[in-house]
Length: 209
Image (cartoon, rainbow, N blue to C red; front, side, top):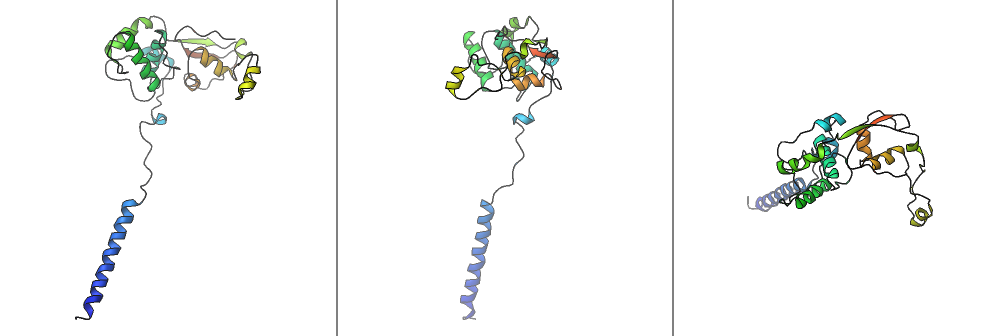
């Protein structure tokens, strides 16, 4: 028995080492890929129309996460108030929060960048006119388009005008909208002369040749 004792000890040591190796490998093994977060933009892009923007109402709390008709409405009203939220795209994010914070500062309110009943009420004077409109694309909208805008500043300086690469880009800037958002409000429509589209009506549209 005394001669078997060292072998038994070695076997026990090997078993213990094997257990430790298994636990260590399990602890540091790569985890399976997690499902995409529910807060990712792709999962929060709600379907809504121009009519939904007009009808959107606010009661309490922060703006909905992701993209919503209510956030688009607030962005339009902020733009009309003289505080730009960037482009109107319906997404709650840093630009919208910065615009709300600037609006709160101008109104001498606590500045947290969050929507509130007080901010909503102060925005209502800018909601007297419709927030969306129908617009028929004209031949002039297709005039002066360029194939591309060069990235080189010297080449840009040589251009007679910066221009636009598409009617969609041109109208999106005119109505202070994100291009994808303008497309979202007009599913299945080709942006070409004669087509009637829905667009938001923020501050006075930019008149640019």
